[in-house]
Image 1 (tube, rainbow, N blue to C red):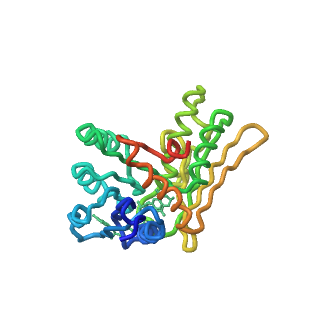
Image 2: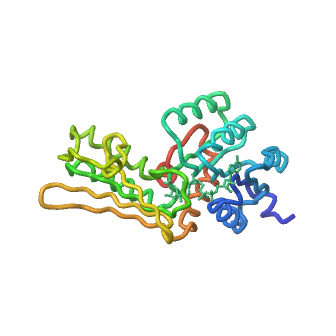
Image 3: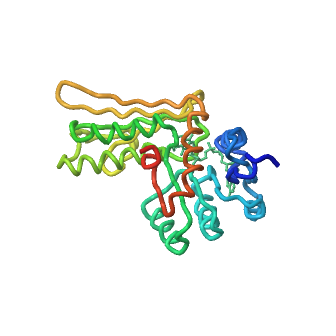
Length: 253
Ligand SMILES: NC(=O)C1=CN([C@@H]2O[C@H](COP(=O)(O)OP(=O)(O)OC[C@H]3O[C@@H](n4cnc5c(N)ncnc54)[C@H](O)[C@@H]3O)[C@@H](O)[C@H]2O)C=CC1
Ligand SMILES: O=C(O)C1=N[C@H](C(=O)O)C[C@H](O)C1
């Protein structure tokens, strides 16, 4: 064993045979300061992660599976980096409750690990107070299970909070006659439209409008490698941040 391997952080990946999991395994394997010690997918025993001595787990599974995985990590004192979607306020509160009993454990949950996507969300939150209208259009590959995306939901919540802070009311909309779904989903008062098409990976536009002008903020992930710098950053940082960190923003600052 080389000196590098002796000090490398030991990483387990859950959802290892999925689109993101496979990319994460490659990224961890290629990082000199990280060692991939467990690659687990549906049907595999999570005890393999403990037996391999993983210090950090990365979870890219499904909204149905992620809470059980995360509870297992916290109970076993394993730090967790989570990209899986489906985190409501209620779920986050549950995770905080588990962590209260394990004060040394860190969990990072990020709706999007793409640095450009994080900036897109920050820019959108900043712009929100200046525009009376806003709608979000997210576009993804057709194998995605959830709609709207975690990124779009998070963006809508940030925008809604900024609008409320600025005292803005509902965006103007005279629609009275609507085919169900035509105006998209309503997330905290922000309309979100989800497109699914072969050839897409992960894309989002936030369209703002006010009298005489619009502003469009757009981000595109053309390849899942775009998420890897953010994932590796979180893997390296999570052990230094006990408790729950939501979003990559705090790690970038
Ligand atoms: N935060 C971010 O930057 C990103 C988040 N995502 C999210 O990550 C999740 C996974 O996305 P994909 O990789 O595209 O999906 P995928 O369907 O390709 O992969 C999910 C994998 O999890 C496995 N799995 C299901 N239950 C499991 C369990 N109990 N234990 C271990 N493995 C289990 C499945 O067999 C599958 O191999 C989704 O929620 C997606 O929205 C995706 C891309 C970026
Ligand atoms: O399923 C995906 O692909 C993605 N999921 C995340 C989301 O729902 O926001 C992140 C990114 O959009 C890719």
